[in-house]
Every structure is written in C-alpha cells, then in structure tokens.
Image 1 (cartoon, rainbow, N blue to C red):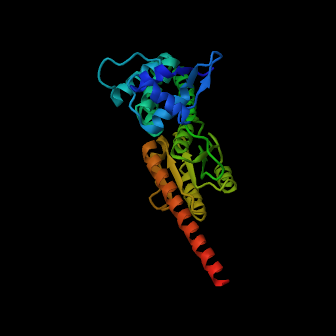
Image 2: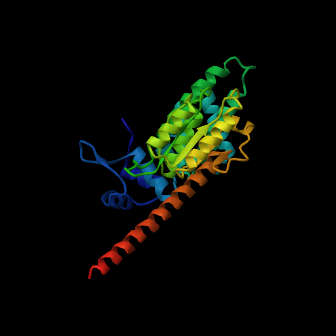
Image 3: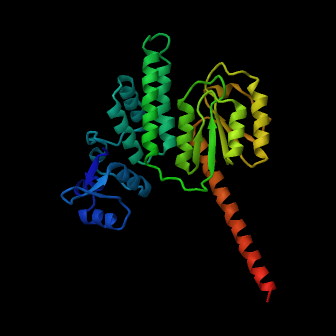
Length: 311
C-alpha cells in the first residue's frame, strides 16, 4: 500500500500552515484520501508530484523520503553520486530509493538523475570487473535497482493523453543492455512524449517499421555493447534519411556510439548525456506546438474567409 501523509506532516514538510495544505486539497491541487475515521491523508506520490511541479522548497525531506533530516548543507551532486553508489553496492534498496526521491524533490530532473547517481554508479560498479569476481552480481543487482527507480520516477509523471507525440526506440541487434534504453524512455516521458521502448536486441528494420506504424516524432537508438559492427554506420545513416522524410529525427547515444562516425549524416543526432537529449527533445516539442498553432490559425483564417465569401 502506498504511504500516506497527514495534513500536519505535509505542512511541516513545506513549512506552511495546515490551513494552506487544506486549501490546496479543497482546490484539487493535492489529491487526498479519507481514512475510516474520516481523517484526510495525502498519497506520498501525489505529494511528490505536487512539490516537484510547483518547484516548492522542502523544509523536511525526511518526512517524505524516510531519510534522516539533514544537519548541514544540502548534499552536493558529488555527494548524491557517492551516497547512491554506496547504497547500490550494498544492495540497500530503501536507502537508494529515498536518496533519489530527495534528489527529485530538490528539483533535479530525470535526466540529471540519470546522468548523475545512476550512470556514474553503474559505471563504477561495472569497472570492478574482472578484478572483482562479484562485479557481475553487483551490476545485475544495481541494474534491477535502477529500473525500479526509473519506474518510481515515472509514477510522478502525468498520464499521457491521446495525441501526445510519440518517442520510440531501443537497442539494436547484438546489444543486450536493458538499462540505457530504459533511461532514454523515462527521460523522454519526463519531457512530455508518449514513449514506446522496444528494449535490447531489436533489429533496425523492426524499429523503423514500429516508428512508421506509431507515427513516432522522435526515434532513439542506444548503443552500448562494444562488439557492435561498424557496418551499422551506413545502416543507421540510411535509417535517419528515411525517418527525415517523416520529419522524425534519429537520436543516438551510449558508450559504443563514441566509436561510430556520423559526421556526414545531417538527420542523425548524437548525444553524450541525457541532459543534452532532454534539451533537444524539449525543443522538438516546442517547435511542434508552434507549428500546430500556426496551422490552427491558418485554418481559422481560411474558415472565416470562406464564410465571408458566402455572404
């Protein structure tokens, strides 16, 4: 069962009065439920969504995350990475989840969390192989933890409505890595796309056919496996050209992407971080909205002109 927060604790979390919290509840900004005794409670995830959406200052994050109240300065990004690494390495799931909740409540985007604690910790754990025989076990356990965290972050996002632009992608054949594409899907969902993640080991022709079928506005490929063939370069360049005919850019990232050369592919975009991808995707959404607004205005103008001509 999802944890519930009392009105008084919500007031303490934000440093506001209980009457202010009740006003938010009565106005529908904060979702509430009632106990058998009639007391009003706020589901924890709804509280997190409300705080993050309003960019509100959190005075007592420990009441939301279960972590001890801070006795010093706000942890730095380096502190967040180190704390998450230690929790992931030790398999301390609750501590890792609470830390990411605190990062999210502190205003960090999904892209920043992926670039910071998640990616850096996974890199450090993976680098322990082959000297550390436990590295594979630790990496698999940390991967499952990161997927659980991404699902938790996704639960804070609004439900996408029909007509939301689609983002679609995965990892190509011979790339078995699950987490990178999952990160991309969650980042693009945070930006505002309806994401379709086809996952690892997906043939390029399947990705293309799925993109066409779902009218994807952006298509991604995560390249992580070091053994990916260089023959993939012309194949992806050709795919980018075909997608460009539908005004859908192809975006590529991942550790292995650095070994490919796509300089002569104007419709293919490579990114070194989730934050770069997030900025690019937001630009696409803004451009798409502006195009739609212009089309609606032309339609209204034409409609008025036709009605005027009938008089």
